[in-house]
Length: 159
Ligand SMILES: CC(C)(COP(=O)(O)OP(=O)(O)OC[C@H]1O[C@@H](n2cnc3c(N)ncnc32)[C@H](O)[C@@H]1OP(=O)(O)O)[C@@H](O)C(=O)NCCC(=O)NCCS
Image (cartoon, rainbow, N blue to C red; front, side, top):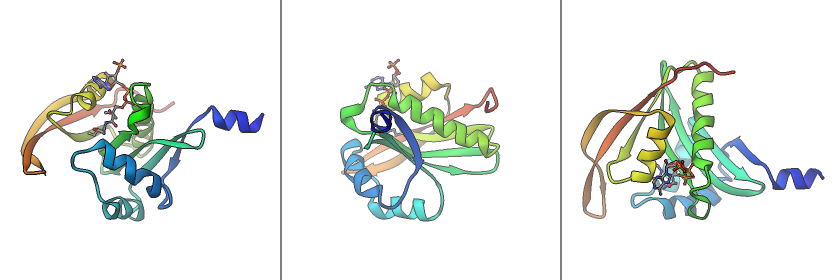
């Protein structure tokens, strides 16, 4: 009974360094410009808000976020390709918003590649709006790409 409920549940936990063994290959699949293990390790060690999302035992998504004064900055949010389009990113984003509000943030900010339409749609659906554009913000494989800067002003407090 207990095992069954774990198997069928979605959980959000503070990321550990051990989680990075599972996260690193997902990161490689998800991005043309993936973060290195060192960058992820540094975020965990620096106590950024780093969250792993599991369905049962399986690690299916993760996020990295920095809490600032009155605002949070979402640095990375990913769902493993096999589990995409099932609403998991929305759940993870809501969890990161909950953490942000817990730390008294009034809004969340992020940068997203201008060609990353799935992510842009995800953020628009959540309530993010465009507030700027950073020219040639991303560099990878000889490509330069602009970033859209998006902001989500929270309109309701945590329950
Ligand atoms: C962007 C990403 C996190 C979305 O994860 P997901 O779990 O598939 O997203 P969800 O199922 O929760 O979808 C929520 C909404 O996002 C949008 N969306 C997600 N994938 C989409 C796609 N392929 N095309 C268009 N819209 C998409 C839709 O608005 C969707 O709502 P809907 O189902 O009502 O249409 C996932 O594609 C991913 O990990 N991509 C690689 C990493 C990345 O680019 N992260 C963002 C960095 S800024």
